Image 1 (tube, rainbow, N blue to C red):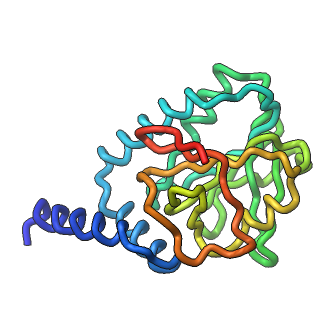
Image 2 (spheres, helix red, strand yellow):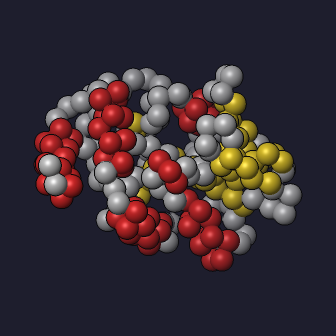
Length: 210
């Protein structure tokens, strides 16, 4: 089958499936495959559009922001672009990056300052290996990774619960802002009491408010 026809059929199937009520496990598979189908040009274009939308985000009252770091090989949203923009336009905002502990699925946060050292871990994730730790209670806004999200503001993550545990340690008034390469689905079927609802989600086309 020609590549263009394969891509066309995949997109048609994707739109149909995304309109259905699916479980988180089903949505993970669907959206991981959707990312894999992106060409490098499409991936780059979506990231530039994400950055443009991010620049419209209201950062009033934000003194400390948490950014996840992307795995480019998996075509995750490129938050390095947002890091650069924040450094140039809001140098007064402290940026912090997570370091994951896969033994207990918790995270520590490190400031993006002169002492920060980044390296890629065994799972291919860029993360701090040295630097100044930041208490979770100082974080005002969290940019949350996700694979999919729905129109109510619930996200589908990677299934390990890192961010659910992390958010539970933050202040009750912390802002939760998702970043998605794709637009929302109607509803995530199996939301539970541990799922944290986002206040906003940034896509290449708009900022959704919930």
